Length: 101
Image 1: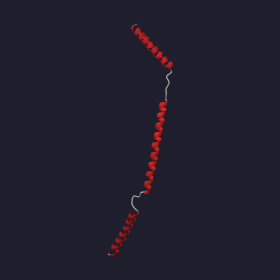
Image 2: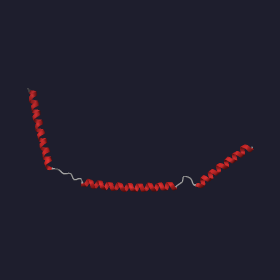
Image 3: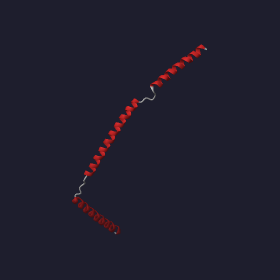
Image 4: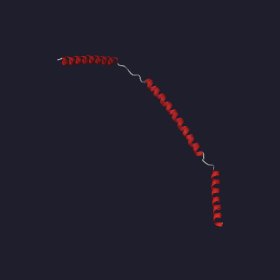
């Protein structure tokens, strides 16, 4: 019988807490709290504008870098010509030394 009394007391306390929670929810619904999102929208628009500007700057810099890389050469033309000529001369000299001596 003691357990039945404990369970009934527990049930009564739980019902009381439930009623209090329902009353709080009803008060919250009656207040009709409105959410103003204009500040967030303005902040988001400013951030979007900043990102767009940064992306435009980045694209412009990448385009300039691409143009500069196309203009640049790893080795000057005269150096490549001189290297090719020296390889040919060395080849001819080696051929002469091998077959003349």
